[in-house]
Length: 386
Image (spheres, rainbow, N blue to C red):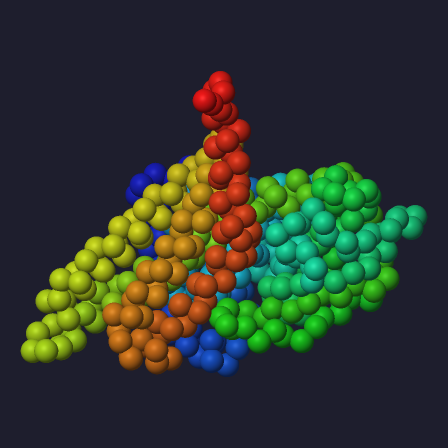
């Protein structure tokens, strides 16, 4: 992992900002309205190093998670839904880099890092959301292959991507019976449901992935049998920080437009900003944004250092940043009045896109559970009560 200096970080952020302004922001409204998944733009992102942001230097950009937070904030200012997909793609690439052997890394990472091949992460199932240890998609051993049967739900990029990292049950019930296998596109027996009609995230497809007697070489399994749940949770730690950064970026974009709008818009003979309630709203929005940024950087630094409390720090940052991001974007819409509700202003798109961030990568109720249980574990009750 490269440790960037403040000057290098500034140059990195500026380069990503330039990409976001040129390739994402101008087309965000069209992609949302027409449900366009911008595959060619994603390949351009790969050309500038965004396909393997924290994949090791042999194949990827080898940047820190703290750098990744800054990168995803900038990408989300251009198009929140596309930035969120790039986050998921990076999670897939990192998992293969971190848990794959040399042959697997050589086979899958060049295409993923260049984004010539796009990745999808397959964990959730129709009957299994937050309780990830209860997945039922099976992988029965048959010689040198696994035979997969089951369905995955809410899979970003499904049908348009090339590499599917799938959590499957190879053993006993519970978390210890789960393994992680890579399934390439066009494998016989793999099919996709229709594109889901969603509140937001229209610039990326979301579909079911069906496995019917899908034969996958055992050589496509990451690490050992039974390691899948650990791999999934390790990946989600980073995914939670990344999606928090996407919330931050989308909310920051909406806030900047609201800040400009209330200074220009006249009401009752004065700018809106002459109203003290508007000033207070801006102050609260800025406070939430700065707090979210600080918590995300704190969690990213713990990821980078391997701190003992990384899991709780990532959960805390994700919970706060996604809640705050939605609140700030929604307040930005309110400050725009009726114009905020119009598609052409872009604010309502960001509000719709950010809402799902409070659900995915572990719902915010699960984040609260992780934080609370960590507190109780770290600070057990001393003595009895009277």
